[in-house]
Amino acid sequence: MRAQNFTFSQPYSISQSVNPAIVGTGLYQHRIQSGLRSQFVGGDNLYSTLAVGWDTKINNKQSDIKNYMGIGFNILSDRLMAGVIQNNFISLNLAYHIYLDQNLYQNLAVALGGSFAQTNFDRTKLFFADQYDNAGGLIGTGSLEITGFFTIYHICEHWSFI
Image (tube, rainbow, N blue to C red):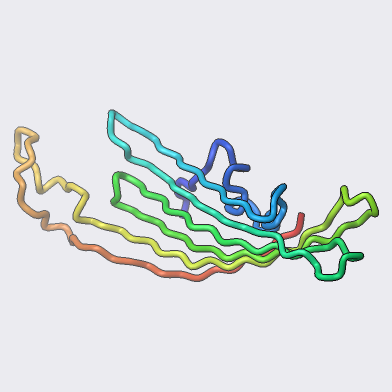
């Protein structure tokens, strides 16, 4: 199936959506990131994506070892065609960052992430040909097409290296 995937124009603003190995790489102990993408077509907000993420560093208790763990979560909601299709994702990411040099400039991160996804498809927000009169006006009755609302749940896992 080919469909439009959400894409942020500034992906670094919600980096966990791009790569789970990014968790824990912020300048400070904790980091909160968010992103909002809206597309207006003909004055209507047909497409919108909202993402919020939090991650933190878990420093090694041994002061002579500079490697560290990062953990974070990400919530993303993608709304298509003014709510006809709604995709929601909750992700948990875990990364271990290993420094490769003494100056702490180069590192390797091994990450594991898991997501719970929900897809809603609301056919009641669609209009079909049998709902229009001969002049092209909406007659306001329900369609003979199958109408209704259904939800799909799926769980996926992902891993990456940077």
